[in-house]
Length: 533
Image (cartoon, rainbow, N blue to C red; front, side, top):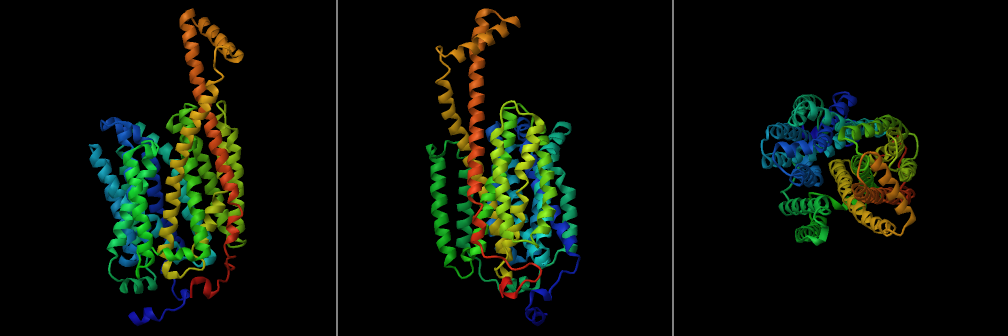
């Protein structure tokens, strides 16, 4: 058997035993479960806080704990999949995620729920990199774009229906059921994975040749990434470096990660193969994944926050406003998947960034009188280009890199996208807070008794309140209060407009960047050297 494996030199000599599309559907199922669970948990957070007797700030640890643990697993998942066998590692992650979903649903106290979420994040963090590597090995290069399109549809549809489904479950049952619904999906995923998924021969050879565990690298990346994720998630809440705790964690993160880079670069069998970044295509693709994460996660936080805080939408209605955009991306994914095999992938990424930049600039037209229909349409336009970024980058990741590095490629690119999401969310939240204070100072300078516009607003508001039955003194006080509230809303609105403007400028600057990459080979007939031979 060993000789038979060793004799397999050409990539095309191995093909999966089952239909590749059945394999793709199998791994997509677990992706859908994991992403759906994350978006549902966001909506149910206030209900969790109320039933567990916790404050809103304490309840946010339900989200933070998951993000930190999954972020730790992401960069090392490629190494774990290679060392223990990708199929075994993938199925173990599904088991951990499903079992811990049950524990989350049964939790009666906040500490138990947080512990269960930490363990759930360990399983969830290993799913996406394994799935993308499985798809890369299962499909020939000419079909990879369409395979990643199917995978991408699950990634975007789950967040689209998550808030609405989460709101419905929480309102009609209890928040515990948002975790229990993972159980049948997880069991089905396990059964199908056991039947459909298999490791290519080269992975079996790698597993047999695996050396000693790099304990130092494992510890450095676990603690360093965990501290970094904590800083990004809690920085704004704790006033960044005004907090000794955030400062301490930031110093620890930077120190450990710098040492980790030096250690892994010089290690014979690194947990994270940083030398892959020397490949011009892959290094550029990782950077593009990072920015994609910032835009995708950042706008997914910005828009619902705008709708709920300034427009007074419920979580469920805000979810309904975002859902059509998810289905727009679902429609665009197959189109991008087919085009990636027929046109220059670099041009597709550039076009995707161009459309995204225009869509983000269009969102600067948002105001406090915007209708539900306008929000839906503008959000749909804003996400149209993302499929033309996600699919080509996911495909370009594997071009020019040895096939035995597919696990590393997947874990690295997913880690970059998630890190970009955390960093983008943190920076945008901070930007909103700081610019709102600036706009508030400017607007308050005009709300003085001598201002004609301000005096006129107060007079009209007083008269309207008096017609509703308020006394003169009470109406006067209430008019001042309403003016102050209106000023706060206007300053907040201006800060959202500024955020979308800066995002559009940053994305526009990235349009020429894909052309730094080497032109990928024709997908219909891939030369041997493109596979790393």
